[in-house]
Picture 1 (cartoon, one colour):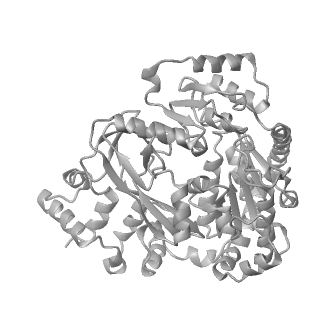
Picture 2 (cartoon, rainbow, N blue to C red):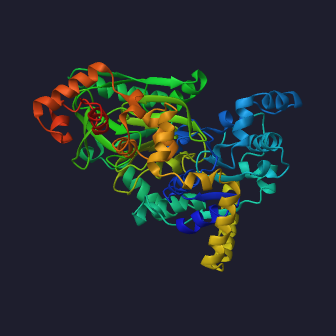
Picture 3 (spheres, rainbow, N blue to C red):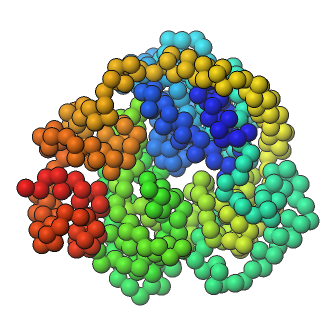
Length: 537
């Protein structure tokens, strides 16, 4: 199924299981739908089975969002206690669409508990309390941790999966791998039948010894201790000064703790000139993406300068990761969006696209690890194997049977949807959005600047406003340039910062930002300079 068709089905309000091989753009489709919902003022719960996956969407784990936490089952007393939590009760009340990403790692019991709690909180006996639910993931990737000897391993065994009447949308276009040889290997793993050609291709990559090609590659290990050992060893080899960058945070303590565990940037980032690093967040203007590799070439300024593998120099200024609920920021951490990248774990590589990768699967211990690791590479030429065992290429036998059924289901819904006229599809989408959009009519009466002004009057920060408006911070600053400074005086930079920037403007004699940015050695981002310029006297 195409991404466009999938997005159109999502907009009709049907419950959907969004799946497809690694690299087919599942997260991209989810982000498009989230933007669509937020544009129409719809309450959407953005969650994932793991914290790492949640940060890719700007949400929180389903365990935290639902209020269930680490519970194995819910008693009547548990349900009653959850109802008494007013913030949690209000969260459910204002949520009309629930997204759960990386469903392959979610146990079926938890999905049923989410359904159970939602019905009570929404006071609605329909599946999931009447919310539209989008489950996303790929069962060929890492499975959930089995607890108490459960035989029902995967989420599709949940009663709520059956009752929810999910439409399967199986994405088929490949956006990561443009290499037929690598696609053949990945497809063989998914089919459970490793051909002679695939064996030969993998053996050739294992014997690859071109150190000049692999030295800048990210090494994927299956265990954390191997990753830490490799990165620390390589950093110590550099005969340059070490610089430390500490993470800052705001928000509820338990959410901040969970967010810190999920974010790939470390709490204390140690860098040296020459360090191999990887960006761990997407840049709004695509200056870099999650997985962009490079080398630290300058640490003289406030922020590291990284030369990427395609030759660009990027100033890695501080960014934020947020846990949000219905456009409200509940917790936030800020750090340089880098981590040492001589090595990372297979688990933490999920969702990444890498140009050069070394894979050590000699200690693979669960089905799916090999598939996840190998599918991080964009091309076979960019892949080097440093070890592999029998477990690495295994898939769960049930997954193969399930996948065949899911593909048939997807083709069925694709065929049905193709028969609908554009007018009928638009009518279905309009009916759904009118049903769930909140105060949409009143919202349309306000200009985009007035909407930003209302949030400013609530004394919200730039990041909070940008998130609520589904815009970049730069766009919001553009709104400020049209508004009375009295409305946003709470956003004024600190006195010392203002003094330094004002002096740079005065010495330059110009209002253009590029010479000021250079004069200040890149210590402040362009957005920070634009904001400060609004307060210059």
